[in-house]
Image (cartoon, rainbow, N blue to C red; front, top):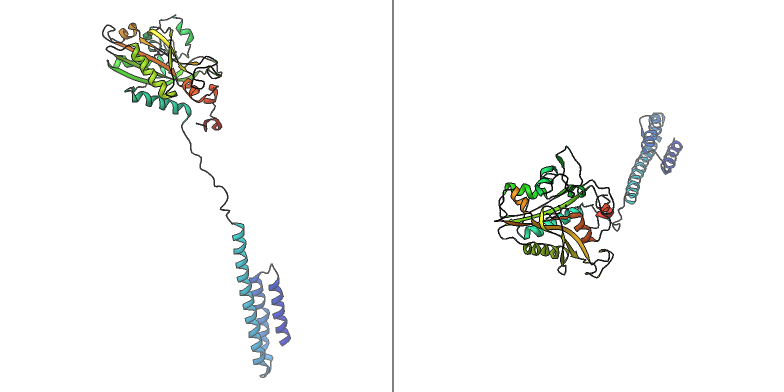
Length: 337
Ligand code: DAH
């Protein structure tokens, strides 16, 4: 029996040395109710009174040994698992973090806001007008009768014979003067539409910012001062402006206005195509017919108006040479602003 107990101890020891040992199975095999050690103890009745205490003591030792060995092995397994976990889940604190992506305003929206702020600073208010407009406001009230050639250059999208997508923000002038009597000092930014094919400088949808000032004694000098202040604030203090005679049906006299090229300062470069000047807007003194149509007496009041392309201002400000970049929503482009 003594040998049997020693065998059990050795067998348990060997099993516990196995790297894949199943501790619960070992416990059951040796110490369980039907286990090997229990079997030996059960046979003790056959022993002599002399042998019984000795074997009993040895059996206890063996049981204790196996119990301890299982507990130690369990503890070792637990430690090993923790070590493995610590190793596998280690965080490299020197790795660069993931920066959260923060959105920002589109460059056109940024520039529009900047333009608005400049005019707000000069006392202008902001008004909005509809993008779906009557022919009357888009053309007729602006002194552009049916069959006037100016309609060809602003061919747009028609909803019906007399409802269209506005081709310019100028109709807001008329809507404003119908509602509000002088003094008037407003700007109106927004989308406009023309039936143009897309290329580097054209898009069927683009943005304009209209301006209108009507009061007693408004002169072309006021127009010039206003636009000069705008240009210097927008493009830099050294910017100059130049008026070129032009024709718009709703202003008289009319002008196209250029700014000195801020890249070359007027010497001529790629941006200004060697001109030294870049056209940014159309402007003029509000035509008496337009004032009269809104019940404002041109003998008492005068006004100036201007309209500029927001894409154009954005492209000039940032040296963007193709308008399509502004509409493609490529974040590699947009992130630069
Ligand atoms: N509406 C004109 C256009 O789209 C621009 C313009 C010219 C606006 C002269 C004005 C103006 O207010 O006075 O080409």
